[in-house]
Image 1 (tube, rainbow, N blue to C red):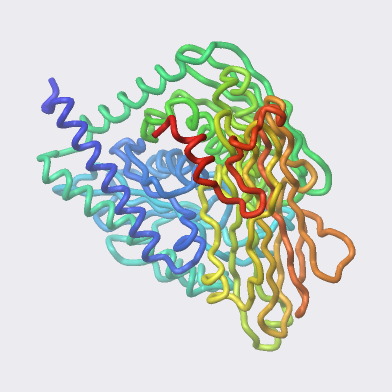
Image 2: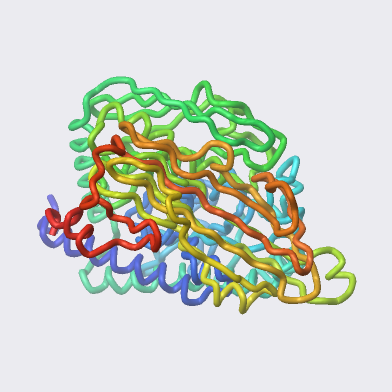
Length: 550
């Protein structure tokens, strides 16, 4: 018999959600790297005794959150609970266990109450540099891509593993930032554990068993009810993506049944010898995120709401890369899976699914050149994040320069210039880059930058939507493709390469626009949500588009 009423359990659930928010903000505020501190490339969560995710912070990326949900189960089974001590923290950056590439560190901490493990806190964030060839697609196996740390103990009964920290610092071009970001991850775990214990004491909880079962079962029930609203059947879709040196095809078969939803990637192109391959854990994370955007989107993300979604793929297809495939830029194709999945869902839910968007974030890892190291000049490693437009929705225009599906905010100009020897000369929306339609796609943006010192710098490009722009839906037109140029050079730059920007040259890159939705002839002046000159929403258009919702 339950000790608590449903109302009491719901209040405690809300408290857990508040705890993970504080946990996530601790990580962001304590981090050193702009990609964490400014862009929010993180996850944070609380897990029950079995390692099942009870709650996650709203701030975070699907590639971190949903992979973390599976990783904690793995780590909990790897390290026996009876050997754990208060103050222990475990860590790994293994791409196939954590978040798909080496730069993401995942931590797990057991939470003790009255001398017993009652649950776990966990978090993930991106470290800017781990040696190797750098954060780019040029590696031919994972060993080219930097330092791989198997599951191990980072903190032993409150004592930091000094040798492990020395190894991380010795294998990075940004040792101070990496060290600071690891301390921030530790603080995140500790903050979550402290607040969870306080919450349990406030409500007189000896364990999390009943609360966890309520959260997970309630969420699963709601998700199954949402799946039941969709017509059963098999829905297939394929999209062509740029690939590294030739186009690749991503294929998905979506099977919807009363109590389960399965996605299979059979027919997808095989792995390549460059670092755009995707471990299945990462492909699964973004696939399930896309499904949950439309199916039970109002249900909190936890083990219960994730359980009904199953993702499979043949080994060695590019969405199920096996060791030791290079995977550094796994987001390049992993973040294309939502458009692939939404293409399947459009057949079952034609009035709910937006057009294709830019999808893959325009991630620009940058660092000093070898000659700068030899000359003793400025050394740096930085990762800039910019985004294109989202696809138009069935009821309104797409969003401009918006982080979907990654959720990683765009890098700020002032922050970029303060931590790296570059000057950003321009960052502006590109008029008419969204696909035409009854509702137009979101606009892409143009960014221009140069070196601020008399030294070159390197940019590691792994960009999509250069050759295959976002397609429209229901008669809408495609958005503008992305583009990379360097001033003074006659030809455009390939979307995937290592690019050297010489002093005086200006790097110019355009992010893609989203596809349009609906036949363009149906769009009237009163319907135009975007002003083509400024890219801003007019008051009249906003009232027209959003008035009903308000």
